[in-house]
Image 1: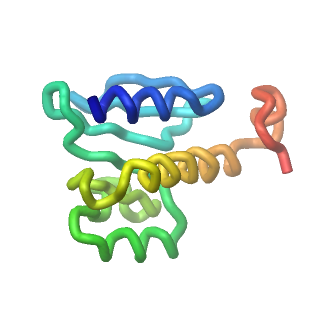
Image 2 (image 1 turned 45 degrees about the horizontal axis):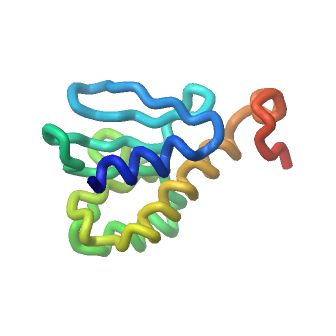
Length: 119
């Protein structure tokens, strides 16, 4: 059930697409740039990976059950290994923030074409 709610929330963000990559990972993207990875173990979520600011990264990785995301840590990606480490509303807020960070780095022309904030 948690997978369905996470998937539904992520797909509710404008222009989000999802592809299955790297075995059992659902990679969520906006304009071809990833902002969320759901690591699956069968039909359950084994991890949630998202982008964050350097300050958030330091704060998050101090929480038990949250680590530097393998292969992505240098780019400030955190992995929630234990979903109990963050309440669902906070996890959703972190996912939304990851989306916003990625959108803010898109070229202005791309954001304008998609109707996303350009400022």
